[in-house]
Length: 340
Image (cartoon, rainbow, N blue to C red; front, side):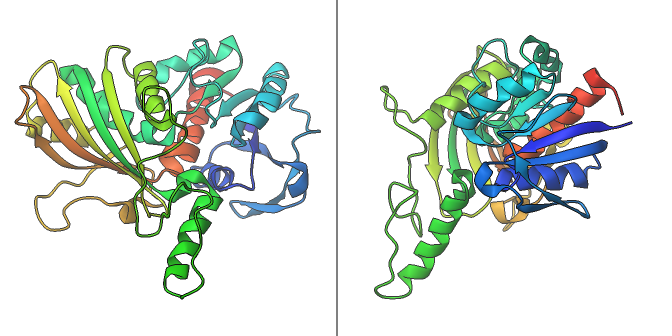
């Protein structure tokens, strides 16, 4: 016996990935519904070897459905998530709407699986920000061993994190720069993204940080440990898919780089590629389509007493969004609902 599963936002990049990953991982589905806005009703999407036609989320009855994976943005989630939750359908939400609510669990299954029990408060579970998700997978085993005091992270985030418009803008600008008179002005991004980097993701806050940077701070504290100090600089780069992060970690106890490498190699969700030779590290190109969070360039930071540096790369449409949501669904099914 399997589950009745809803995917809301099924025509978007993340929604389509959710359907792909549910099929790839052979999630026990008895029935699945693909929902979209009224303008996309009837659009066909793939689920394994099946083709689904999207239904109108506005008129959909969530009664009798076990769980719903939402990828529809905060505004629409605010309208439809409470309806689904009230009907007894557990919502796994990919937007930022509920991440910072104290009574709603924010989960990365490799890191804080026990938090799943908190879904009972409001029948809603939050999925973290893409840049946070991959980083905390790397931080947790190190924190368990040596207690992390402080993290300094610089991100190199792909344009797919900004949706289809971000991908299109990079593509169109790149082509336009090679054809005189066909240059494409910035629209989705604040400045030209082709052959450029932009140290600005989301809105600016009063302290000079951007909201993306604030999210990494707040979410790391909620998922891993409130005592960890985090400072982030988030940068958009001209890469289609795959977020990269340079992470500096200060721990309470000394942790040798070799032991850190061994610990990470044995930790769930992590693939260590760390050879000190040309090409002996992971880049976004290699991570696309993969489930793992790739860790490379593990080395001691000699400027502080107990410090490590590492390079962290992951497919942001997968671990940063759709995969993590499906892993939460698997956790919910295995630990709580237990129908399959």
